[in-house]
Image 1 (cartoon, rainbow, N blue to C red):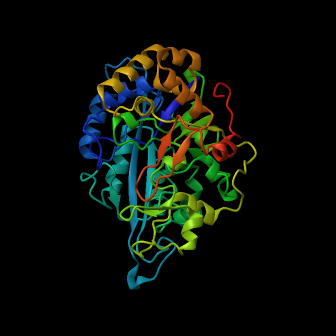
Image 2 (tube, rainbow, N blue to C red):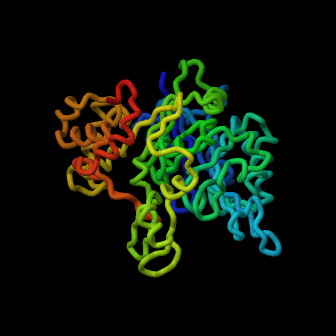
Image 3 (cartoon, helix red, strand yellow):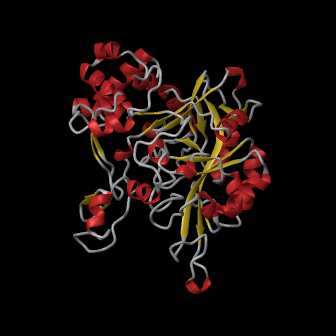
Length: 431
């Protein structure tokens, strides 16, 4: 049985996140979307953890269900934290500080029980104020984080979040590292999975041979309910074998079935650029300007594609043996908004979304599996758009420096490159 998982989420206690991110709303939204395994998010935040303890019922397998709910959604205790390793005395860069300033990395943490979560929070509270933000900033190195978390319980799982984003990705251009070993030191042995982030997909990871040994996972990193599951990791287990250890084991052993991905060009850090100067450049164009903004003459924010090109030892399009497949998807409400010309949060889009999901069961089923002819009976343009997305035949203006890219799901102009780039990934039922 397939289980779509969303392992990197946020609560309303995290910065810049919606007040509607409650456990009850997350549970209901996961059911509508077709997500079977949902991260609780932010277990280190004292007030949110009180809500988790009050509302979550352990299932005896390391997973939890919302009390009184019949959605069937399984929850896993999760958190995102930011480690900040400060500039060393004297201004000399260290292995944790390649830029001579500070090294900042976001990490996802998964744990199997409440007691372990509490122990982790008690330990991390020594390195930062956990009550300020659901995504706490901790004055410690990445290696220290893993050593503490893994030392509390070897069943705990840490992974680099959105691995390539410029400021907080482990490989990011603004102070990131060139390898997992460089970032995590002697604790790299406990890192088994890397999260793609919105501006990258597995095909970009495949260009680095040193990343072949890691499971590539994806999560939505959602700051609001509609964004839940915009990226996801899909596992396959017998229903009676689903457990926390099964999920962790699948990632440790690279037994992910497939991932669901944003178009990386749509991510807001794919290309290079300067948002304030309205400058967006490909890595090749940036090189012509020596990575300097042609408008303000300051350094460009170098995006994910640029960073991948810098570290890659394989050509674009390379596919490793036994690579886990992936598919691209766009949230259904955003597709409906585009094809109708209406705002994403208008009543029209909401009503159409509800009608389509009611007919086909879940949002994910609409996006990935439902018969195109049947979707056309509801909305012909919507069916055309979903067909184009499934075939990767869309036109995209890449995102840059915090600006999301834009996708024209009804235009196939300029999509030949995308088709050849991603045509290698075919999953039964997704053609």
